[in-house]
Length: 88
Image 1 (cartoon, rainbow, N blue to C red):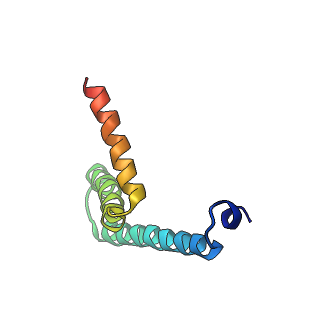
Image 2: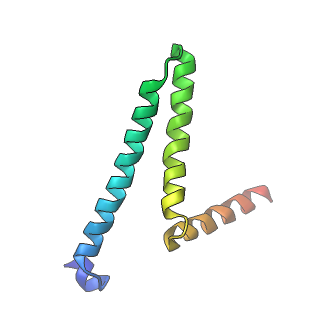
């Protein structure tokens, strides 16, 4: 009711977005899992490689899929303002 009356959009649009974001997140998890299963490194080195993968892969996927979305552009603007304020 809130989504339909307040936002003036169909509830199916919301469910579509949730499903889309869930598929992208699950795809990111599966890619990381597949890559990390192929790694054969020592305990510390393997951990560091997996840590790097967990930081790099999801962020790259989200940037690729969402870089043209207005919400993402807004986030970039806010983040840039915060960085500029800290540099002063």
